[in-house]
Amino acid sequence: MRVSQAVGRTLVELGVDHVFGVVGSGNFHVTNAMVAAGARFVAARHEGGAATMADAYARTAGAPGALSVHQGCGLTNAMTGIAEAAKSRTPLVVLAAEATSPASNFAVDQDALARAVGAVPARITAPERAVEETAAAVTTAVHQRRTVLLNLPLDVQDLPAPPPDPVRLPAPPIPAEPAADDLGRLVELLRTARRPVFVAGRGARSAHARAALGALAHRCGALLATSAVAKGLFHDDAWALDVSGGFSTPVAADLIRGADLVVGWGCSLNMWTMRHGRLIGEGAAGVQVDDTPEALGRQRQVDLAVLGDVPTTADAVLAALGAPVTGYRTPEVLARLATGGRWRDVPFEDRTGGGRIDPRTLTAALDDLLPAERVVAVDSGNFMGYPSMFLSVPDEQGFCFTQAFQSVGLGLATAVGAALARPDRLPVAALGDGGALMAAAELDTVRRLGLPMVVVVYNDDAYGAEVHHFADAGEPLDTVTFPPTDIAAVGRGYGFTAVTVRDPGDLAGVRQWLDGPRATPLLVDAKVVADEPSWWLGEAFGH
Image 1 (tube, rainbow, N blue to C red):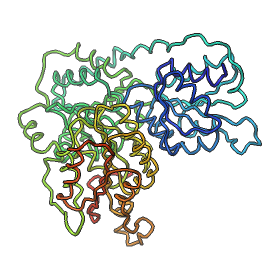
Image 2: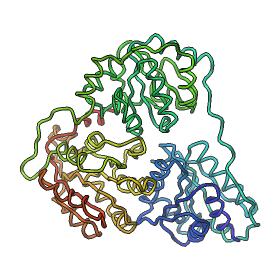
Image 3: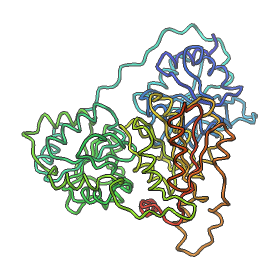
Image 4: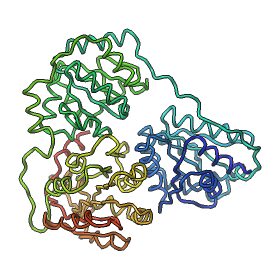
């Protein structure tokens, strides 16, 4: 057995069941070793796409992801996706072959690349330590929620390795319990709050956290909101405000602003989630609960920072509270949520006309057409608020939001990874025309994998965010606008069924595809109204 084979087999023994990548000479053997051990290899058309697929798979499946890339250029091609994963604390192991001769064309400082984007560098150093070092990389990824770059030097990969013993991950760390003083202060704040709001973030994306926060909110009369990455967590709760921040409806934003206590549960309360602090009303107390010390107070000064696991802390607070109180859960608030808690309920002037469809009209119609059991992935751009807020999702696993790095072009690959993690749901990729064309090569991956995916392209023939941001300055916009592109034709070239949508009547093609065998993926080239910025755009450029 070679070192590359020992590494690949160990990864699979430790729970890595999918590996994404583009295979070259340097990562050929380790990838094949993983497949031989039982993992599924998903070949992407570009390493950047493969990295985001692995990231989205890990987020949605709740299992460690793996990315396999060639030395040097294979790794650099993947760096944007790796940066997104690292910033999002995704448990991901990047297997990167490594040139060992400084004279090699492929030689780069791969450790420095990892550190530059917040990933953890590691290396296989010797045959007798290959299994141990592989296990350490997976342990760091899973138990510390980190993206780990595991370098595989070419001159070590081919050395004979001793027969590996069976391995397993060590037991997970015991969930962090809050200090008694912090717990007491949080209990007292909740006892005295009259209008509490909970904002759940990435650290609360679990069934245990949802149940614990739901029970605690019921006891103390709190309204429930999420950050964008946790959208869907409280989907079925009548007291949910959906996403807090720039995506909030006017009613939701007003209710959050009216809170006298805002508690972030596994949520950084950053500028996006709190609208640069404007959603924290004057005199309101701010609390942050997180199991990562460096996350506390990093984005915003709070009145109380509680180091603790989210569900463990919520359960402890619930046990210490007394009888239920009404809090913010009044009939008046419930009535407001029933009529204005969702963007679908907010009236708007339909601007469809002149061969272009209003993106709100488009997305609301798609929400009605598409099955409720869906997993939605959204790219970045002026359009992104429409699918994020007009398309409902059944739970937090129904929404995959790779926006920690704010890169355009990750949405399609995100949808692929999420689709493979949840094959029981219809995958929906919502893209702008810029992101769709950046990632067009992965349309081949969608078709090749046989995914019954719906790809919706909000096509305004521009980088719309820049158009609307700079339009009032009177500067030329030639650098961010483009001649019309028939993206439906591009989709057909990759083997998609494709429809062009200019008004609601054109969506009949979507219904026809949904009613059929769905033997090919569907691309919707939606020619959207381009003369109006999305409502969240002012927030996005307010930093």
